[in-house]
Length: 190
Length: 253
Image 1 (cartoon, chains in turn blue, yellow):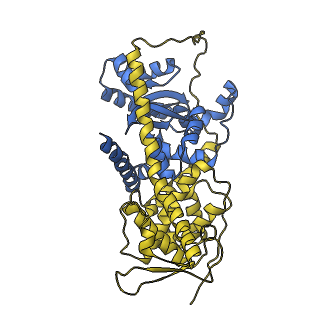
Image 2: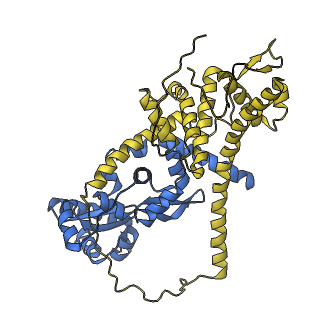
Image 3: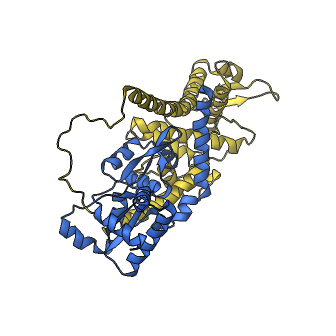
């Protein structure tokens, strides 16, 4: 059995996302080999037109149903509709999807307006999650697997123009300026 | 004197200051640039003043953008004007361009969201969930660990409270200075810039006072006279001026 098929079995058996690190432990191989095996698995699923897709969000992966099977699966498990998103929610989600994980002030810097309520609502709907790590003393947020499921992509990298919007120099600029602003007051207190 | 009143566009709904600014620039059929932003500066201020629906917690963000627009416009009139305090933070033009990109991306995202072409994960089994909801701290939690966790929470709150305050101070001052200067002029009919500046506590406030002066000149609420270079500036009320300079920005381009 290859690592790819072993991973497929593990992911099928678990009902929640599995960390790449955890897969490395289970298989006793380095994380890099896990990443390579995940690529093989993803290609294999595509190749045999599987009803499943390998989904990746940050350092975690899971097996989900193919978006083309949405209607059938919805009937089978009697899923409720995803519900409407307000424009600010959509905006915050888009920014987090392309630029995440990021802190709340970073989201606000791009939106130009305070976004604490919106982030909280999105967290309550399970579309955004707070990560354990921090930047500049702030928790970082990213989109959740539920969000990836809702829009039917296997990772944020599959979003249209992902590289352009993520790597755009101007965003980096804005964020650097923000970091400078945030760092300076704490220096005077050090 | 040729005064051309521009067409004032009303924007019915906007989600934040950048959204409002973007809509104003778009309605004027302008590209995003320093000049186009300066062109819609008054309209922006007018929208913020006339809109009772802007929640108080969002108002500060609108005023920050209004202040940046006023400063940007002043700089186009007087290129030598430069205040590092007022230039801190990201450049508005860059910020708006970036915002525009994400607005476009959000539209595509909206389509993906509504397409309902979605994936499903396996549903978590509910039977294994713990029945009792008592307080069960994880292994290794001590009073000391909780104390340090609480300290981290408090430390995290601090920069949040400090950051917006700096912008608020700056912005409130521009508004206050306009009111302050106009009140002086209305009661005494003349004053001088040095007298007006005497109240300024720091460099930044002095710069803001000057911006307030420029704003009132531009809106024709006051006249200024300077006999020689570096002399004090005499400030007089414009006898034709009517209304409240804070409530009624006139559109003059």
